Image (cartoon, rainbow, N blue to C red; front, side, top):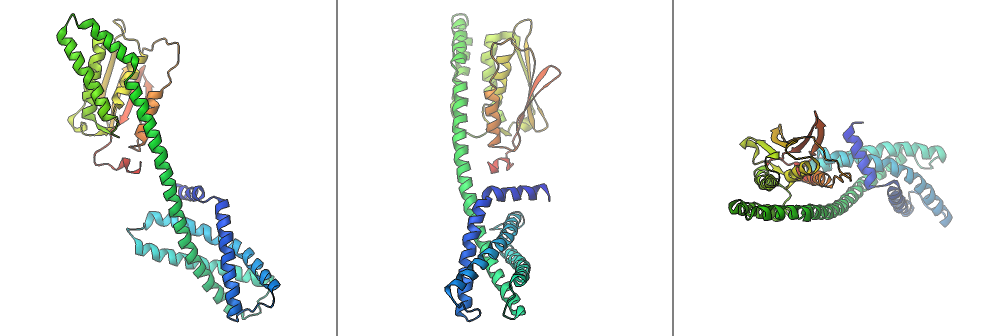
Length: 367
């Protein structure tokens, strides 16, 4: 069995547990057997001599139908999941209906033959055996076509319910992530440092102070605008990054160095907003930056990734990093792309690789 088929089979079990399927098949078997026993009685095909004999026929029929039901239901479920890949509703409806009916009849004929011979071995039929075989094949075929339709509708209902629940959970998680991101941006520590820097230059260099205020306001304007968007262009992220690093360079001076080498081709690709700032803040927060150990940050593209690279010169910190910013960044990527950000250490350098999402991609369509 292929890995894709295994995944489909696992998804069947996730939607329909054994308990659910057993209850369904049990009720379905009782309903079918009541109809069959009563039809045979009133049509004169197999007349019931007493109420006790009716319950005997019903018990015998339900017992066999339970086993037959599982032998029909599991292939039906697997076939439904297979058709979801090769003949989807809305695109190949006619082909799907034909394949489902043909498969239902084929499986029903095989199962009915097995059970007819088995039932005859237990208690030989009083009727002509060839007629019983044909009758059972017709009954099994009609029942399995109906069973296939019921299972199709049930799976559709369960998948819709599951999708609604998942969408609700994702919405709640996204709201929480937005809150965490916004809280990290309106960080009292960052604001205090920024205002402290501003107070230090406002009397010395009014032009630089004004520029500082412009960039400071640009940062928070972008945060409030971008936080509601699932993605932002790399061009906007780089523009925001320059404002952010301008404030940091006012504080650290020439001890903080950065270089950007990105072709214009990549500027219109997408990534979650504030992704770049999360990585830069992480580098500045956890590394020593002084005249003896200036911090150099390189920003460039590598394939379809934006790479942010800095030398490792970690601060001696009392507490370990929570990694919350990078965890939130990974979660935000999961909502818009199948690619995940990658973080690694190589040759005494910390390297973050952020996937760039193409504008004509459908990567985020499933999220």
